[in-house]
Image 1 (tube, one colour):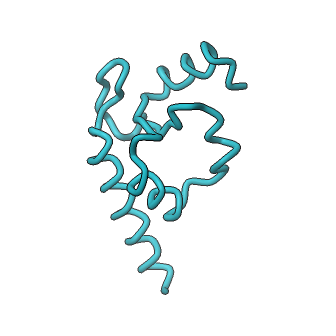
Image 2 (cartoon, helix red, strand yellow):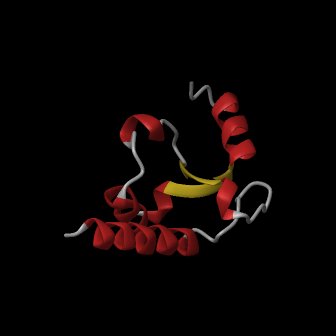
Length: 85
């Protein structure tokens, strides 16, 4: 697969994941994708998926019940509340 095709696939998968998860922060309703983050509901996602790549978004699409969208502020607050440091 060419770099251009990989880039296009990544963005298609990412866009589909945003749509599937509702395009907004589940805590505060913020809807600007530039500050939305994919969050593992049970925490420690940075250990399971250190990089966001096409494979990560395939997993989100395959098992959306494990993920949610949070804005950057709500994600950091959740990390603090659940001691995900």
